[in-house]
Structures are given as C-alpha cells and as structure tokens.
Length: 142
Image 1 (cartoon, one colour):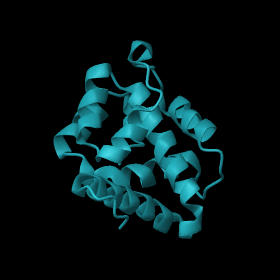
Image 2 (cartoon, helix red, strand yellow):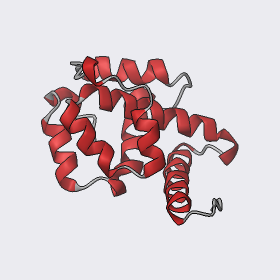
Image 3 (tube, rainbow, N blue to C red):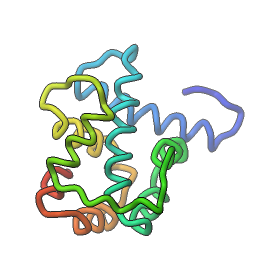
C-alpha cells in the first residue's frame, strides 16, 4: 500500500489498486499495464455516468471509493445527461474511450470492470441503475 500520511488517502489508494488489480487479473495483464486497467475503469465509469440521470449518477458516485469517485466525475457536465444509449451505442462509447483490444470486446470489458466495482456498490443501487437503463443495456451489466 502507498503511504500518504493520511489514513483516508491510504484507504482509497488501496481500494483503487485492488479494483485495478482485479481488472488486470481478469485479463492476465501484468502490473506494468496499469495504464490499461485505469483506462478500462475510466471508460466504463464515464459511459455509465453519462447514461444515468443526474440524481442516479450522484447516488452511484457517493458509493465509490474517494479516488475512483474523482475518476468518475472527471469531465462530467451534468447539463448534458442523461445521454440515451442503447446497448450497442454504450459499447461503442466504451470502445472509443478504451483504445486497446481485449478478448471478448467492449461487452466483456464492461462486465469485468463492473464486477470489480461490485463490492463497493450496494445491491439497491445496482438495481436502481439496471432499472434506469434500457433492457438491452441492462443485459450487459453484471
């Protein structure tokens, strides 16, 4: 764990590193490819955030570890959401932001990233998210 001198910073750094490591392990990426797991996390979180209503995006953001929350909100313009995206548009958005190739494509990437995030989000929040998107897009979410 990286020592920052502040326990809350140490905790969020540790949680973020565990999320990134879980993504890396799912794809067999070495730690040296941390930029890929970060890019995957960022692309999926931004696409999901922009698909949600402002209220739902804020409720999800409140549950994220502090460092991940910063990644999530980076560049967010609440006046431009929700962006209506069906499954294929959502996956295209993720692939556009994640410029690497992965086995299983963007759908696998979304499922892997969200599975890594699952321990940080309550069951109720996941249900709210899934009920707030189209049925075809909800089928991609774990």
